[in-house]
Amino acid sequence: MEEKYRQQPSSILKVVLFGPESTGKTTLSQQLAKHYNTVWVPEYAREYLQNKWNNERKTCEPEDLLPIAEGQMRLENELTKKATEILICDTDLLETKVYSEAYYVGDCDPLLEKFALENTYDLYLLTYIDTPWEADDLRDKPNEREQMFEYFKATLEKYKRNFSILKGNKKERLKRAVELIDNLRRK
Image: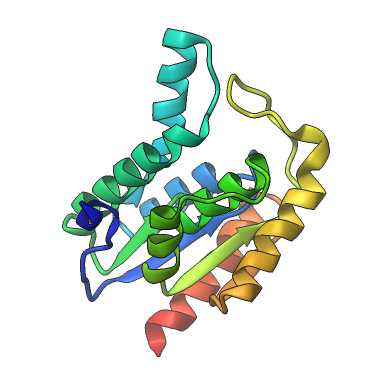
């Protein structure tokens, strides 16, 4: 059962876009995948929760988090096989853990937490809140962006993840992200 949350071993470079909602992660994921001629792993929670909203008019509940984590890792593991030397991930289980704790009074399923901490990535690109808020059916914390950003940053620091903060417009973020990834590739 636990295997479905586990990251499959791989020698490719894995980069995660990490941060609060509506901070440009998906856009940058797509740009980076195109730049490196590779694939990117979309955020499974978006599809899952949009379907839930469309069908039930309900938002995320604690019992949704493990199916979301399972779907995210299934996508990542499938797309790792199709990636060139780099895999761009729009999110990871650590981000799901952050949202679980932020929305459910510090609570996180022990299984989700275990794999959020065990699965590894080479670089986290923490997206800052200097992009315009874009509302949709799922986004719901436009007034808590700063607090959420600080929570994301504190999580990366707490678990000693290799990360850099990305600020600026789309072009500036892409340029900085490419510099950071290229530096990793040279190591």
